[in-house]
Length: 314
Image 1 (cartoon, one colour):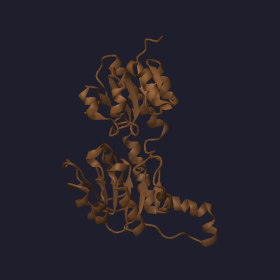
Image 2 (cartoon, helix red, strand yellow):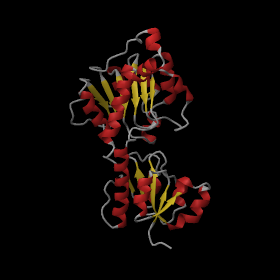
Image 3 (cartoon, one colour):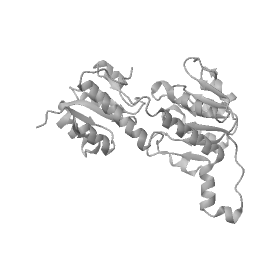
Image 4 (cartoon, helix red, strand yellow):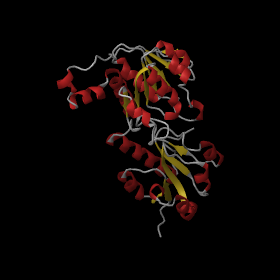
């Protein structure tokens, strides 16, 4: 019998993080349990800590099965899949991994943006498939340099995207809840901003408050042929409107890292040659995922040792 406190690991984690956690905790791998309700029934009363992923979260039913839960540590910045109201009602703190993945996600946003403008995956396929030799040069693409960029949500990731876009001489605008002391054009919402940009990068947090924030009306208000990049959450963008706009040519291209119904996304996306697809992998590098795991564990250990949490979620 161990005296280590039990942590319920809801979302799959790299083995390095499970091994590090096991040094101070009894690790209960909920994610690999065949019968999850039975697993909760057996272990729920012993669980004091929860580790979960951003896309996995923890719901009210799971929380109710953990009467002695003390803290939820999220392996992500976004906590929209965590039932925060239920946690607050029970005074259970929630932490995330804010800060350590900002630059990685911003890098992916710029990679998707440049790939969409220049159709880099299509060019790769043109060479690999023999079309260059058989048909000659592929069609001309659009340059990114100097194009007008709109950022939906100018938090830490949005600001990092803007900083990178400055290197491409892109005039930058943003929408958000309030105007910031920053030299970019401000619009109170994406609809007001849409007519004034050539590309839209979505960085807003997920959750009910931002569901379909980039709506069909916003997409229709973009200049014809505009480019959309989403590194936020699939829920922030009205996905059916994106599909319709790609079909009609209202959107000239897109770069998408997030979707509704991940990982079983709408198969129609695979049929668009002008859409660059990623498997929700903006933070998926060895370096950043390692830093995320370290910060998640540091929050858990801080709670265990009676020290202040490093990155609590308000």
